[in-house]
Image 1 (cartoon, rainbow, N blue to C red):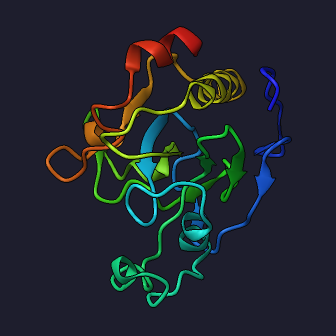
Image 2: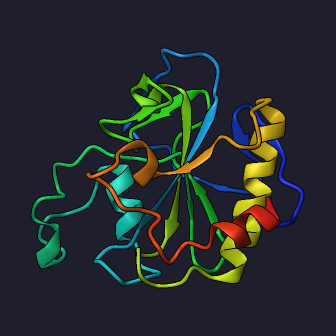
Length: 181
């Protein structure tokens, strides 16, 4: 992915498009927040197909012993950034992705309505790859410019759902990220 990200029709042009059924119309028109998450399926395993299947609603609870409670899950994210830097887009930015759950930012409830959810392939405890930071920085810069968002409006899932969520976790280097954004 090049350093210059283009957003056309609420899509990143160079991202692989994987339209998820787990999306809904936004109740808030203005996008004002970016929420960073981490995910790996099974936990700590990278590069497989299971995260994509989860967001597409096709994950079999029988595919792995850890998936029995995930087969009925209805979750998604706008973007998934793999450890190799590849970007998959599951939900267009003008729609709600179902990534934040019960959440609040600066007193405003229901962060899905006004945020973009970006999942990084990773865990709370394994350092993220250099290319993920580079791609994430470019994506965030493009989103902020395109949607005229404040540069400070990037948070972790743990910031909007404290006590319930920990991602992107202590392995996420915020200083490294801000140097690239």
